[in-house]
Length: 123
Image (tube, rainbow, N blue to C red; front, side, top):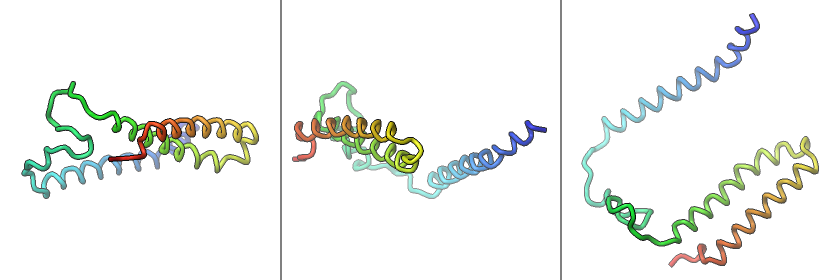
C-alpha cells in the first residue's frame, strides 16, 4: 500500500516526461517533413565559430572564442546559483551568505581576468 502511494507521487512526473518526449518527436519530425531540406553554400559557411565547419580538426583559431565562452560560464553560473540562494537565504543564514560571497568573489576574479585579457573588446 505504501509503495503504491510512493509511485503515485511520481505519476505526474512520469506523465510530464512522456508528454515531453512525444512532443519532442512530433516537433522534430514535423520540422523535417515541412521544412525545405536543400542545404546551400551559406549554411556550411563559418557562422559563430570563426572557422570553416568542415575543415581539419587541428586548425588554429583565435583564443578569444575561449574567452567569450568563459564569460558565458561566469554569468551563467552566477544566475543559476543566485535565484535558489536568494529564495533560501532566510533558512541558510550567515553561513550561506558567506559562502555565496566567496563564490561571487571567485566569479569577480574571473571577470577581471577576462577584462584584462581584452575579451570585452571585440575587433
